[in-house]
Each structure stands twice: as C-alpha cells, then as structure tokens.
Length: 65
Image 1 (spheres, rainbow, N blue to C red):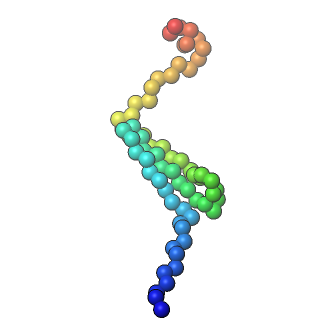
Image 2: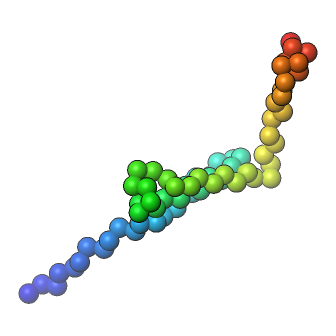
Image 3: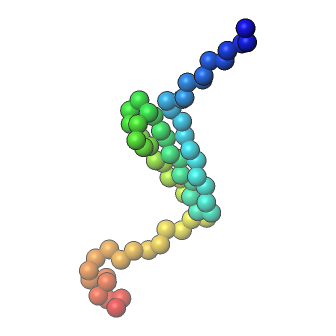
C-alpha cells in the first residue's frame, strides 16, 4: 500500500511585496475576510522619493498660466 500524501491546505493569510525605484508596496490578503482581493495595501516611500509640488488653489493655477 503506497503512502498517500494529504494535500496541504492553502493559507488564508499572505502578503505580496512589490518594489520599484521609489516605493515599496505591501499587499495583504486574508481569504476569510475578503475572498476577492487584498484587505490592506501599504505604501512605503524610499528616502530618495521627492513628492512633486501641486498647485492647491485656483488662484495659484491662474497665476502660473
């Protein structure tokens, strides 16, 4: 009689980490809470990242044009 191996259950929680030159994003999954997608996405910016300046008011937009 050959030894029968039981299939391992799939984990219900896991993380996927994506990294590029400016950011690290961590996608957290939990199939017990949401079977369709991530339950949390966390972005960490590297020290070299410089956030671009944005015009905040319509007055600033008109002044720059």
